[in-house]
Image (cartoon, rainbow, N blue to C red; front, top):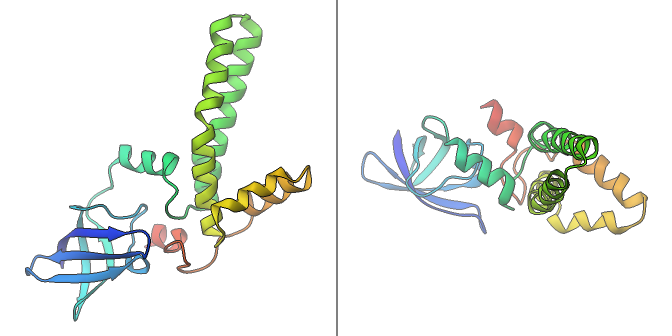
Length: 183
């Protein structure tokens, strides 16, 4: 059945969808099959059973600006290791190396300032993206503070966020992003 999301609450991972039949159906985050959490008014396909909606899929693609904004700035949800490395770590590393090389090679003050500003800009996204990786491992985002333990903390965080698979199936932070992407 087709319908529209009326609401979704990330604190309890519950929502309400209005079906084409005019009825309202409740759903949980475990039933959501999109890459990012649903937003009010989003069109979805779903299976209706009684007063519940299951297997909710967003219709079409979720818009790219919303997806990137959510990925970089939101602390809600879970992301995979692949998303962590390919959408965040690799682009940030390449940009940092290129800016550092250009700033050092040219000696232009503006490039050095730009390099500093890019580093400053990436503080919030690195915390947000790291939090979503922590969520995938069923940990609080506060776990990232382990990096404050000299040497051991940084290594532990790298291994935990970068190399270990998230929890299988839904956890307290939402549905399994590997399952959602495969569906």
